Image 1 (cartoon, rainbow, N blue to C red):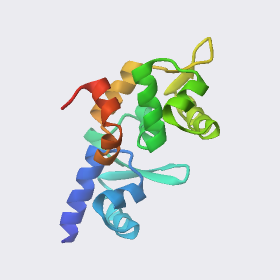
Image 2 (image 1 turned 120 degrees about the vertical axis):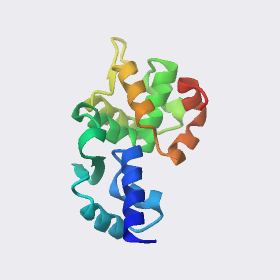
Image 3 (image 1 turned 45 degrees about the vertical axis):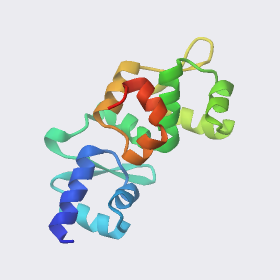
Image 4 (image 1 turned 180 degrees about the horizontal axis):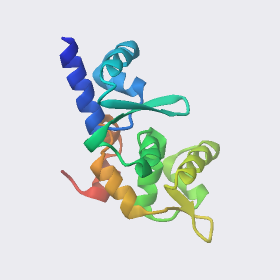
Length: 168
């Protein structure tokens, strides 16, 4: 495969799934992280890498760009558990911590970790009773619809996705 072909494929993935981290880009391309980093360097006029804790996430520059106000939320929604948590709360409505942990079969401390990150990013909030709810459900639905999860994540959560968005 030529350099241009790899860069074209990489650019197409970043355009379709902005906010993926470098290792996930390598997985999607079925190649090495080093090769992705090499090609991202060659695309730096078109692609911006943004640090997110221990990850570096890729976004298009210019017209196809994700608004800055949505990037932190999208960064989290590119992760398996935060996406699942948000989809569950979108689908079911406000849920208490214990109920959410049971529904997801997720340990309470791991759930707390992800809930805290989602709350800090303004995706989730607590209601007056302490139940978790999506802070702005219309915004999050639009964000997920516009920048869908990768096919592998989407297939994991196909039932929840179809309940929220219908079948394609």
